Image 1: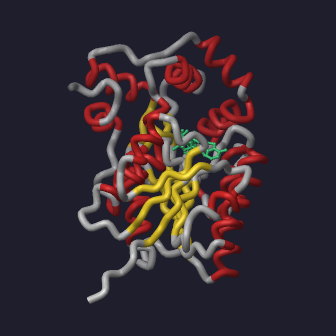
Image 2: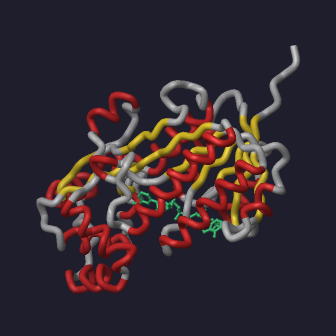
Length: 301
Ligand SMILES: NC(=O)c1ccc[n+]([C@@H]2O[C@H](COP(=O)([O-])OP(=O)(O)OC[C@H]3O[C@@H](n4cnc5c(N)ncnc54)[C@H](OP(=O)(O)O)[C@@H]3O)[C@@H](O)[C@H]2O)c1
């Protein structure tokens, strides 16, 4: 019997956290049904070179500023994993939409777009956070382009990544910015490895009811800063990495568009997904303690 040809998918953000996790999930599958085209701006980077050593991955060079040139490198692409760059929300929206247009023009049938949870009404709410609103606009554009093309989509809507917690300036700044909301203030978190697993399922089961034209919010824990601190101390024997409040305040002010508005929104609104509900569908979603134990930089060797 003739073998089905492998489906070709473009994975953007391939050298990053979510795209990398998707690639890990797909390449660990016992019978590959997908050939991966991994996008990077720098094929000489260590992470791109590591990807290139896998025969099931073709590394391609490109930039979100020129989407047609990216898709021109892939013969008959079937799928597209879309990650956007949030530093400038207007540009994120424009590039996200241009990537969708190029994907559809190249014949892509299924798009998995990783956006973000946007509170109680993610389907209709853009929120006041600029880089959440840009993702909402990219989602709306995918819905309308898919209707026109007859293709399908899955939206992933993760909450904050545990990986924001790192033992460096950024990680310490994250905790300091959170502290300004108060020790009892809560944030929901998810592991990017777990996002990658769900993204892989969305490609492998694109026609299933669970994934076809659906949005899936993802969270593994709903935790206050006080609980987060206790868990960190208990699991690692160390104090939570943190810097001075004045630094947190400075970051929220200097990066108002990217971080300040978002931390205000964490306090006023917050993510909407119910952790218990989503764990019903994806029991592997890690809570903070499990992430510390298995994936974090503080895990025991
Ligand atoms: N941090 C959180 O808590 C959180 C929560 C929810 C959603 N998000 C969203 O997640 C997204 C980021 O995902 P991530 O953290 O997985 O990514 P990441 O680890 O920050 O990596 C960024 C990836 O994007 C690629 N990239 C950046 N600019 C590009 C460009 N102009 N053209 C082509 N590729 C480009 C990079 O590739 P090269 O460098 O190899 O070219 C890299 O693979 C953002 O939209 C963010 O808003 C974050």
